[in-house]
Length: 285
Image 1 (cartoon, rainbow, N blue to C red):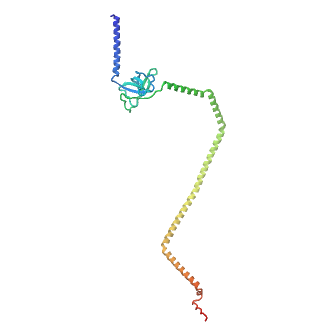
Image 2 (tube, rainbow, N blue to C red; image 1 turned 45 degrees about the vertical axis):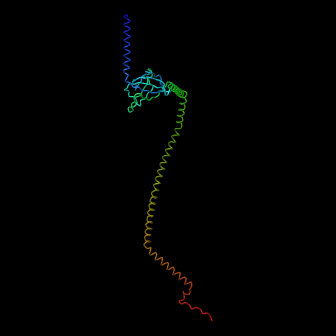
């Protein structure tokens, strides 16, 4: 074997050892120190196996598989492995992202919440859809259309119209300002007269209110006196009840006597002038 062949074989052997060492170190780094998870998206956007997995912007693992989900083919199943100590939790959300503008797609995972429960290996990470290129193009088209409308609205022609309207408004205000000032003065005078009228009404109500209150007080006093008088009369009547009954009885007896005397006069009117009753007439023989 020539010297050149020996040198070439030695160099190839060194490269093989170096490659084996690198592969071994990489496997040693991830083997036994990684945890596997999965998530689902409807738009993968160029995400491929080997793409970086970012947790809060830090590279913590890689994507191991990107494939349609067997259960629901309209969704993309993404398998990933991350460092075992990565604190994924139930509030963490996976979405399509990029390491930088010039790099390929990556899977970005948010840090979630400190109070959320940690996700065990093999769990499903919640996902959030990113806007696709088609949606971005549609949004861009809508924005361009809106900008076009705004440009048309703010063009020189419309600006002249707006300026003409503003000039007319200024002219109208200048012409109507004296009328507005007079109207304002009249409103102020009316307001002043209204205040004076209200004050006069308040004074009148006060003046009328005091005599009415006095009359009501006097009327209440008179009613109280009448009530006391009635109570006194009631006491007197109850105290002389038996005398009133005797008087009524005497009046009844006197009335009976008068009635009897009247009947006697009717039957013997001559008794008023004669004391003795005349003899009865004899029947002639």
